[in-house]
Image 1: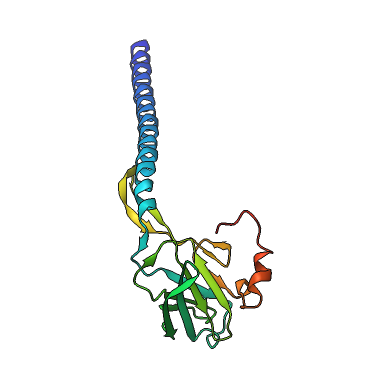
Image 2: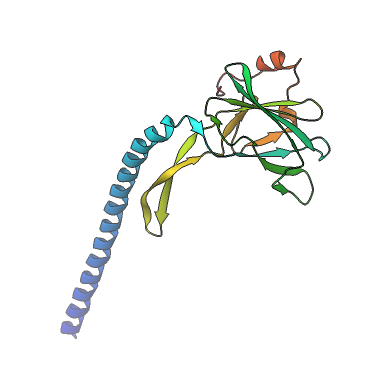
Length: 194
């Protein structure tokens, strides 16, 4: 009986040691992987920040609008306080919600500068100034954690009428009219971008 107890205790200690070894290995591996990720993301962020031209057509959303209010949208590229691109889009939505209170479409310009401002004007002459376009580093993960860097991906974050929008959605209350633009600028909190 004592011999069986010693064998069971030895097996239990070996099993506990193996479990402890796996836990330590997992934690060290995760820590080293996280450090590698931070280092690679920091290096690749410099590359993404150096890209000055947006070659994708970012998707923007409209919320709290009637479809008639945004059936025709006028888009302009504002660069150095001058209009350098101009187009009108009619009923070109990629997505319309069932309730018809949320719409998505792509900005109609195939190429523009990261520093440009896209001006969207609705039927009611409500203006939305969209800026702050940038690229983020795309990272890849597997079941066991970080695998590596992908490429620069256009961020959905942007600034709409001086308000940060996490998913590029334009809300009706954010609107400016030409006459109200100057007074609205004074109401913007100082910690917002652009």
